[in-house]
Image (tube, rainbow, N blue to C red; front, side):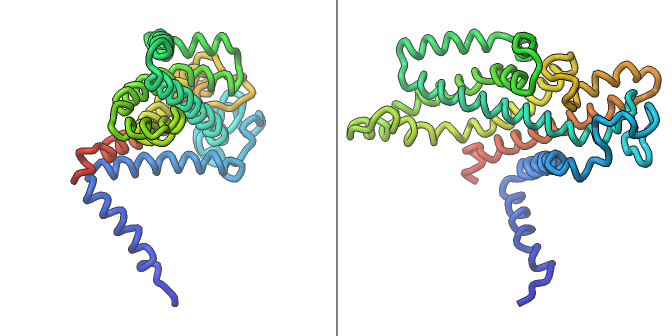
Length: 294
């Protein structure tokens, strides 16, 4: 039986419109953020097919050529195609920001669970360490760690990840302290459930939902931190294509009217951070218990 294209699209249209009526503008904010993120992920994944030139090739065209054909975003001072560097640079910033948020969430959630459940000396020691890290401004701490670790993708990833660990720790620890007093946890303890079973089966599922929102917002912040570090010349070697480094390189040509070297990398950094921010804000509203009761 053949189905018309209109009938095939009816179900997803009904789904999106139904969610829009249920959650209102928060749903459309979430969808817009997800669309931005998906578009940039596709650019990163399909970069060999999308980029018309090698991002390292210094003979693609005239020096500092304005946007046009065949260089859609112009060329830089080394005759490299800006659009090709934008395309390949998306891989670097996504890899660093998402991996940094994953590492920080894993470590922070694990330490928060242990600290909140164990209490006593363990809780006091871990809380003291996390509070000491938390008091440092994020960018300043990232600059210090990046300078200490040296250049490299993994090094800058760890430097960015460290600054978000206390956020997850404080959130999960506070929830664990409250949840471990619940009757169902006391009942599990009474029937002989071990600490690992209680943490994994009864406490962890109840704290993970709130960390999803924090994760998306931390990725947005990690994008800005990564761009700031590479803009300052920290974290990544010149052999790696990165939006922050291209932004720093183009700033000295801005007074000469060469606007495209800073406009396009800056626009992509802002757009990607905006996408994760919109996704996080939409999730925060949709996962709000008061909205779920509608």
